[in-house]
Image 1 (cartoon, rainbow, N blue to C red):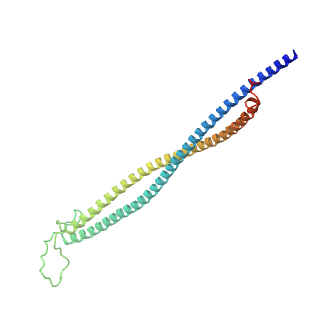
Image 2: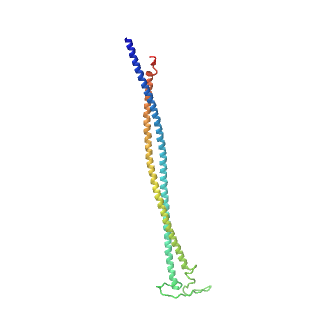
Length: 259
């Protein structure tokens, strides 16, 4: 009777041991599969974070390069604008000075011709009879009288006053054209600088935003690598535990059926 009870007790313990082994082996194998899956998933996440960080780095470098090019362009355009502004200012001043000099010369010549009667005086000036032009000999030997005009000073196309007034008008036109060119150059420059400021600000912001996003991707990469390292350590421990189960549950002296 005692022998039967002892055998039945041993059988119960054997059944309980087998049930524990089956559960332990099943859970351990499932844990290994789960951890291997997590390691593979984390590897994919790390690769994705690395790829995104690299792509963002390229975008940041491109944005920074564009900011540098825009800044260089603005500097060059400003230097060209300053040179053009100085040249236009000098051209306008030269035209104004020339007009002033011509106006003075015309005034002096008009006074001279009015005195000689070649140009009529204004209504507010005293009247002076207009004299007929003097006919000169082909080879005058001496000048025995004061200057007498030989040509109408306002007659086209050779009159000196007409010529000077035409030259003055040309300088006036040059002044007007240069002033218009200066206004146009300034308008184009101002518009260019405004567009450059907008684009440079946009590119600078893009660089900042993508640099921050890249930093987040690098942090994610670091966290995923730490997490994968922890899971790998757990997998190693679980695999070692599975090996430890082998003698008691798989590779013992006899199988459960034999026992």
